[in-house]
Length: 124
Image (cartoon, rainbow, N blue to C red; front, side, top):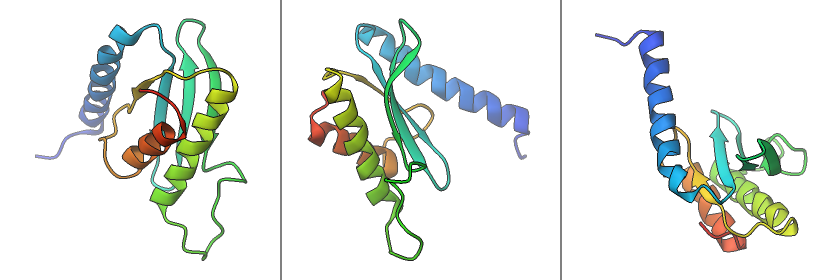
């Protein structure tokens, strides 16, 4: 039997809360939160104590977008976003973050973004 939309939404929220509950032990660190859609991916470094976004990057930015037909794959775009958010965080003196994958599995674009952020110098 197919799940109703309410059931699907409840499962989604449950996954998000489960992941964020594990981040509570790293309360002193800002959170590197990843959001993904079918076409785009974005990341932001959030200070949960003040509720402010400290650094962000997304494929919606003009500089991150590949042009139509130039063969840029979504994983390559995710790597660019990870590198950009890490550089912007390091410019503001943020080196250690807690990685929040949200409801998304750690593979594909989310993994590529995380590895690119680590390679650029973020510690998580």
